Amino acid sequence: MAVFRIERFTPLPAAEAWRRVTDWERHGGSIPFTSVTVPGGLPTRTGTVFVARTGLGPLGFDDPMEVVRWTPPAAGRAGLCRLEKRGAVVRGRASIDVCPTGSGSHVIWVEELRVRLLPRWADPLLATAGRRVFTRELGTLLDD
Image (cartoon, rainbow, N blue to C red; front, side):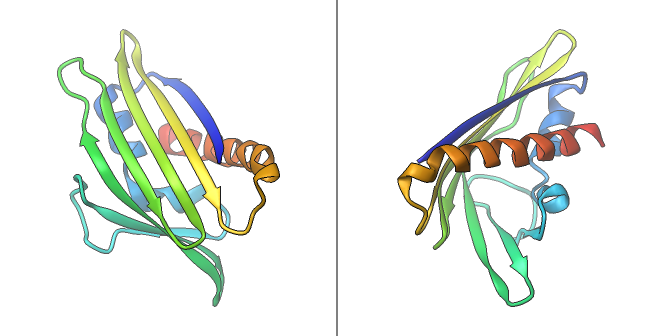
């Protein structure tokens, strides 16, 4: 399984950082050839399922994810979101933690990925690529 962790400090208050990093439909904004939909609509809560579709035209795959823990930040308490990836191609987990700080917030994003048909020896390459893509994505979400 490929595992990577991204951390970012931002001057945004924890509630605003949380709102931005859990706006699922914006997640496809900087990931090439990817769009994200929330078929059940908003608001997000435990049980919400959303789908990242990656591909060109008819060639592509869906990456459905389910929110299995949803605890927004409140009154100095960190926000915790846990996702389960349940697709035919991409499996694994993700966690997004948003911790309030004296000058804004600290966002910690951890991904554990398994890609079908990709040999385990390629996990370090997948982790490196994932770290690059999601670092850019996190920057886009927090800097808008």
